[in-house]
Amino acid sequence: MPVAPLIERLEARRWRITPQRRAVAETLVGEHVHLSADEVFSRARTGFPDISRATVYNTLNELVAMGEVGEVRSPTGPVLYDPNGTDRHHHLVCTGCGTLFDVRPEGVDALHLAPGQRHGFRVEDVEVVFRGRCGTCP
Amino acid sequence: MPVAPLIERLEARRWRITPQRRAVAETLVGEHVHLSADEVFSRARTGFPDISRATVYNTLNELVAMGEVGEVRSPTGPVLYDPNGTDRHHHLVCTGCGTLFDVRPEGVDALHLAPGQRHGFRVEDVEVVFRGRCGTCP
DNA sequence: ACCTCGATTTAGACTCGTTCTAACTCCTGC
DNA sequence: GCAGGAGTTAGAACGAGTCTAAATCGAGGT
Image 1 (cartoon, rainbow over the protein chains, first blue to last red):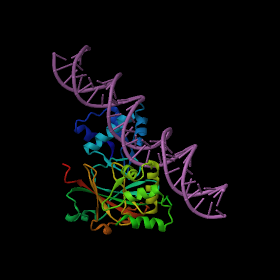
Image 2 (tube, rainbow over the protein chains, first blue to last red):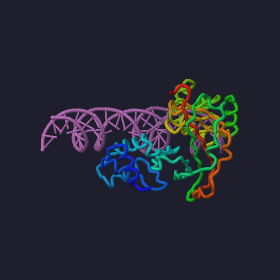
Image 3 (tube, rainbow over the protein chains, first blue to last red):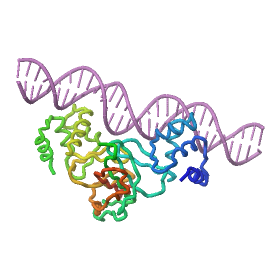
Image 4 (tube, each protein chain N blue to C red):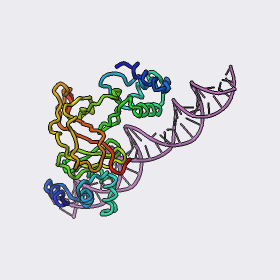
């Protein structure tokens, strides 16, 4: 999934593509990319050295609000941004180093909450996080 | 589940029960109790006015490390402490106000990760979070 | 071309939740 | 009764993120 489609989707929304916003969008390309705002900031600076931290946060928050980018609130550590915004998927997190992968677990559709346990909620989403140790953490 | 069993378990571990630690432990009693460190701090002060914030954090972290208390890292907002530390259970969170309930969803045991998706991890735990709107949030 | 005005960007101050530090006090075992 | 470690404390420091107020940009109208 190259950058063009994301940029094109943003143009189709008549969203102004400034050089700063382009620099942010271009960092978010690839498979299994999960960058923190700070990583996005430092990478975006290589393409646009004067971009400010606030602009990176503004842009990421707008991309998330538009649904073009997903945010993963890793239980410990900063929010990670996931360019694969539309696909439903879940996560596998290393409790040692925080490494995070997307996964597509079987059976999540079958998860449901018995009416007696809904506490008056309208349930909208289920998130599944698998925790474990990655190959390099003891 | 009254306070005594928790205090007794702590004594059984030969953990020194100081007045400060007792004040913290006593705030964490009841069903569906999910307090933030700050709420624990202010409640503990009613029983022990000179307790410091650092002691509350120290004590909560030790209780979590011992497994006597669970911590729920609500995706937004502070960590919540759950005295129901041993029971496996999952959570239902309101995306509006952050209200949080314990739930016991069916079918979680069936969740598993296909070997091809394990990315070399040793999976140790699955956490399921249901998101929705509670009765009072629009 | 030239204004105008809202959209965008910026640096830095600020907030929140949490951890760290270094000094202090209190037990516990000898 | 004393030494030394365990526990406590206030406040500084921290990391992530938001907010503010001022500067700058650029698209649409003339």
